[in-house]
Length: 255
Image (cartoon, rainbow, N blue to C red; front, side):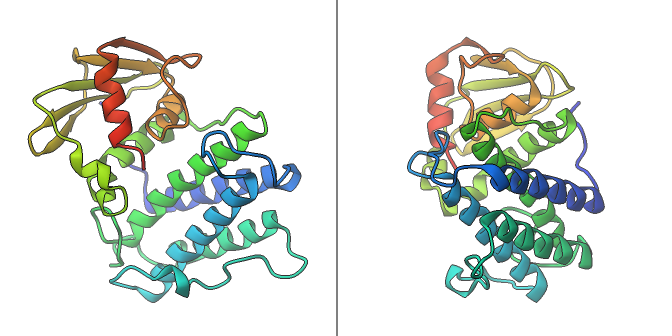
């Protein structure tokens, strides 16, 4: 049985922790260094993306928006004169966490995934920040780390939100099949997922079973795997069965 989601306060703390970890990397990173896990981006590009997304989410929470905020209306889209990128990320992160903590988790707000609440954003920003922090960490030669229970929840969150991602990643809408199964199994925590492709999309069940393809590894590596930051064959990740089935899943779920 997989871990249950955290409470709102715990997600707010988790977001804060991930922001601090990313900003610490940015303090000493070469901003022009290429980021292999996001081809075409450099470290500064990742920092800008994270800082903009944090401010975007914070404004929607602050204003209780029921429609998506146009990116052109985001406040503070770049560092002030003399402000480092690391400090700009810290400032945007502090603003985000402050807004999340100031609003009850059930407060209605627009979300691109199911839920439509402030609590959704606290959970979403936990893993948004971790994954892009991992981009920078891997670019500078540091191993990304995350508590296994958080990594398990991060995979759950990815799968729960995946159908909604079709709004900005159209390939997700092509995620259909005839009963093919993908089994993910964390080796260092209680986390298993049986994903079944159907004519209408996919279903997810928790628990042990035999899939057409099985992928095993530490929970954090599996989380990075579903986000395309790790690959089958990387150290610690094992794959058994129909690799083509997994590769099709991965190609259609690249968000």
